[in-house]
Each structure stands twice: as C-alpha cells, then as structure tokens.
Length: 302
Image (cartoon, rainbow, N blue to C red; front, side, top):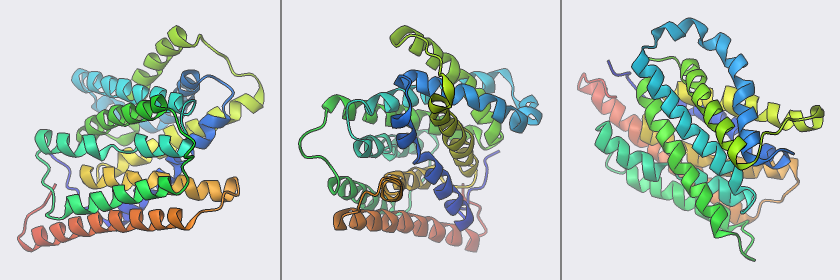
C-alpha cells in the first residue's frame, strides 16, 4: 500500500533541516586528512553502531528481496560519496555542491515513468526558477580563472548515483522505517567503499582526534542525522518536490561559509539565495493546491 504524501509544511521544514546538516559535508570533507574514499568509508562505518539501535526493532520487517534492494541502494550511495569526495580535489566546493545536487534532472523523469508521479501544471516552471537561482548563486562566487572539467564531471556523476539512491529509498519508505533504510543500505555502502578505497587509495587508519573529528562530524551530521531525516521526510513529501528542496543545499552552504570563514556574500549570491527559496516555495504551493483539490473531491493523493 502506498503512503499518503500531503507535503505538509512541517515536513518541508524538517527536510530543510536535513539539508542544513547535509550542507556541512563539503566543509568537513575538505578538513579531513584522509584520502577522499577512505573518508567516505569511515563516515559510513562509524554510523552503523549509531543507527543499529534505531533500526533494530524494525529489521524483522525486511524480507530477502527488500534486503537485496537496500544493499543495492547502498552501492548507489557509495558511488555518490566517492565521486563527491573526489570532486573536491579538482573543483571548488561551490561547484561540487551545485552539480551534486542536480538530482531533479534524473529523479523527475524516472519518477514519471517508474512511479507514475503526476506533476502539477507549473511544477517545471518552479523547478526552473530554483535551478536558475542555484546557477546565479554559484556565478556570484565562482573563480573565473578556471576549474577542472574533471571535478565538475565527477560532481555531476555523483548526482546521478544519489538520484538512484533516492529513487530506491523513496518507494521502500512506503513501508520501511527510515533508520532501517539507512542502516542496511549503509552496510552495502561500507562494503563498496572499503573495496574501492583498498584498490584505489590503500587502506588508511585515522590517528588522533585531529584526524577523527572531521570523520565523526560527517558521520553524525550527514549519515546519521541528515540522510536519516531526509529518508524519513520522503515518506511524507512527493519525490519531485523533495528533490527540488535539495537544491537549497548550495545556498545553505554559502551561509555557513559566511559565518564560519567570514566569506562576504555578494549581492549576486544573495539574489541567488532568494530565487532558490522562491522557486522551492512556488513548487510547494503547487503541491498544496493539488492536495486541497484532491481533498475537495474526496481523493487522497500520493
């Protein structure tokens, strides 16, 4: 049975909170002394003991098919983590955040053909406004001296892998607890990242708190809180709307940079943030209108 997703404001705000935690990722990856894929491995490894108590009583809900699907979702998430972490060595944090969050270009077409998700009349207009805001934001702080096409390409590929993870977890979220999704998929991610790190970088062990604390920050803020909270919201918010809200991550990351690194936001950056929020709000308004019309007709929408 499908979960009813009414796109309530409280879940929109909850997903924005999840995105706020996820937006810390670029800062913490840059601070890690370990190689990119090893950093991703420890991020997932350290999360499993924290997620297990939350998932334990729900694990009996899983059958073999669900377990295999979740492990596959973990492979997609591992691909996203690896490519995103690697991209920071070749391109700016801003570009990596932008390109890695272009999941709607993958999620929306696949959700239409696979899940038969219907889009409101002006959904695409709202999505285009949001995407335009992201590009304006990045244009306001881009280093025009040149950035590597390889890093941009890695970030874009990361968005495709993350979209695969979102699409799988979105449908399973109808009947499986979000902590179970993150725990079991985390096992798939951990194994994949371990093998990849061993083959490409060699296995590395963090020494001392100076090397541990960025890994622990990634574990807590991204894997345990951010992704877990996002998976929970997917049971309450339409996948297309959810993917557009995720585009607010570069805006939030820019705000972090202002407070943490004293980076001054230019007028173009501020304009980009306003446009992103306006686009996300317009999409939310479209789904609210859809919900009200369905209620008036006595119909529950997905």
